[in-house]
Length: 147
Image 1 (spheres, rainbow, N blue to C red):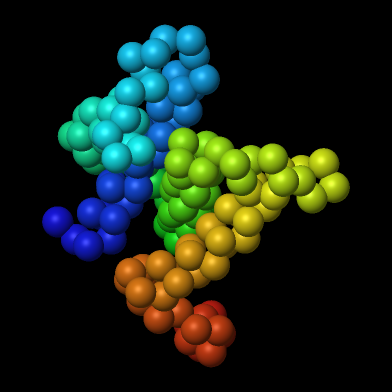
Image 2 (image 1 turned 45 degrees about the vertical axis):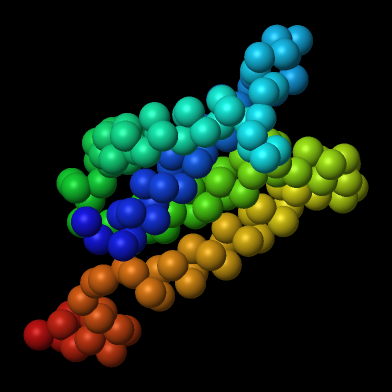
C-alpha cells in the first residue's frame, strides 16, 4: 500500500475514534471514561476498528463524490485530504486537549481556526510530497491549445 494511502487511512481511523469518543466522553457512564495512561479505552478500541474499516470508508467517499469519473481529480483530492487533516486536529483537541476548547477569537473557537489554517498548510505540503500528476504547466497548456 502506498504511504499516502496509509497516512490517509490512519488519520481517518483517528477521526472515527475521536468523533465517537468525544460524543461519549461527556456522558454520565463512568465506564465510558475509563482510560489507560490518559488515553480513553473507548478510543483505543475504536482506533483498531477504524483501521479495519478506513479503506472502505475512503472508497465510499470516492464513489459518492464520483472521484474516478472526474476529468480533473486534483481539486476533489485536495478537499478530501484537507478535510481529513482538519477533522483529525479537531478530534484531537476534543478528546485529548479539552482545555484548548475554551479560547475564542471573536466568538469563534480558536481551535477551529488553528485547525483550519494547519489543515490548509498540511494539504499543500502533503500534495507536494505525494500527489502525482502529469506536469501541466501553463506553457504546456497553451502549446497544446495552439496545435
